[in-house]
Image (cartoon, rainbow, N blue to C red; front, side):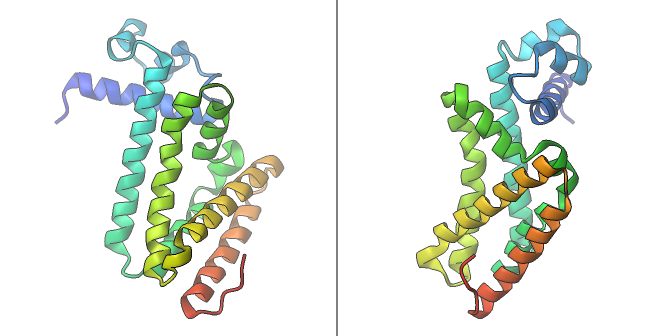
Length: 196
């Protein structure tokens, strides 16, 4: 069982992670995190001296969750097609949150890219993790020469449709694009795919 101090730190990180997604990094204050984590204000400084430190911990938390998810998919799905199909299902699985807040990775990277390039470089690792995993799937599917290009294309489509669903407050846009991507992956598998 985790020590009380570890649990408290984790509660702060999870609360900050939610707030940074829902409100944005710059719009979230120490006080917001204290309230959401339900810890005494003085306690937060024991774990984190600055908001940047909290963000770095939140990014590490997100990276850990993504790695765990991708490892689980690698274990649960036999073929790259099944794994790619599972990836595009994220558009359905997270449609409500994407419609309300946009993509957590995209919105964070966009916000930080305007003012905090060092922090944005760390946040970009969230994208790189997915890019590498997708590249591996496309290479295993038989597209080794184009695997990274296809990975970037899928990521770009997901980001674009997330923005549009958020702008229009319309989750059906995400579901339609998921269906389109799903058909395209099946066509890639049987060699009949056109360019997206």
